[in-house]
Image (cartoon, rainbow, N blue to C red):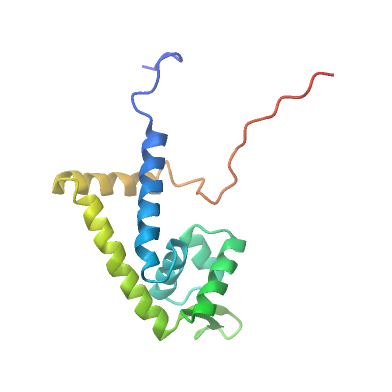
Length: 163
């Protein structure tokens, strides 16, 4: 049965998800600062470690727009953590690779992120933790899969000035 338009939703889901994401990102950023990478750089290193991937593929997996990806990869190259190189399977293609120092930093970042995630999820019982993770995975692969946070957001219309 549809809810009457004047009845508020049972929960402010947008606020709850936004607050959780914002707080987690802030805490992760502070924790990764000690390793010497940003959250975005950590994400790019992680996606580049999995397998040979192009800049575009990593940007898509990391939810980054093209410009942000280029700036992030430039910073990782300057730090000596990543490099653009020719693909081992297609000499025409360029891929992102981790340097030995990049792998070392990534593994440190994994440890720091893992500790934070354990602390955050440690607030929940095992059952609630599993249910939360399962529900978020289901939602972000289903009804909340698009648009991503890199998609243009709808802005409020500015009313026209009276003539």
